[in-house]
Image (cartoon, rainbow, N blue to C red; front, side, top):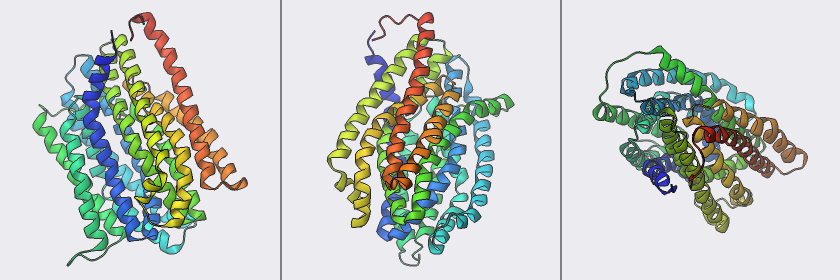
Length: 441
């Protein structure tokens, strides 16, 4: 049997997700572009604030990302999981209260990070406003995953594309001001994001009520499963996010220029990352359904198809990045010093992308299998036992600054892929005993 059918099925579910993921990241790109056009100080403050806030937000988003594999496995087992919609929304609300509380706790700590007073005040302003948007973020994330597990992906991602333009319009209006609306700068960026997030969350909520046959239901075991499967996912994401944002925070103490450079590079890599992330999401659903049905031959084929698709795309992306780095950086800033600092990082980024695409696809496969502990362990070893210590030595002892961290981050991605591939090959041998590997391609 050829892999063509499996690739086609992954494309059918992943293509709208790619559109939505790119839309989601372009919301962030809009923030970066508008902030950069307002001032380098605004860009630096937003860069630092999002570095801190993303780490906290990812706890909730990570745990709720367990919704898709749990529901898709239930579907594979022949169950009717629509009844878990309201428990999912309830869980998202509870998580949003917890995440908002953590954000408010983090605000006083910003003064301890050693930033200039004006920069620290801007970071705190952005953080306080963003804390009130948490439920919008988690409502959207949880319902999008819920619908995705039913392979309902078109409308949620069209809504995200609409949000790109909606958020950009609000950014321009609130940041620069118009008519009776005053120029709000950093506060305007945060306010625009807050409004956009609730529009996205409530939009999906009402669409789900319209699309699915939903009944009231309560099942505490569902919450337990979300925590068991979702907590390792959350920590895996958190470990990686904290590693990248640690670089922003630490190098921002050296110079706001480095914080801005890290934000631009991370924005570039995140744009390309959205495609393999969408493929990973599609693979997770397909693997989850096949795993629930105990069809291990399909599990293998969907896994292999997803890996091939992600790596082919990231190879093309890396070639594009190295061919025009000045042009790409110039889209975000006209500051010649910032461009000078950022461009050399792009060449390291190209190699990093190849392994970044592979690791997220592998993580999607393990998520579909409901085996998420390996992803958390591999991330911790790669980033915090190896990459961050090595990057700190290279950055400060050997005077490599931000480039030192990127050398180390690239090494982390390689180690991460090696660990997860080793575990997947072990599982592959187990599947082989159940479903022989002949005719796999």
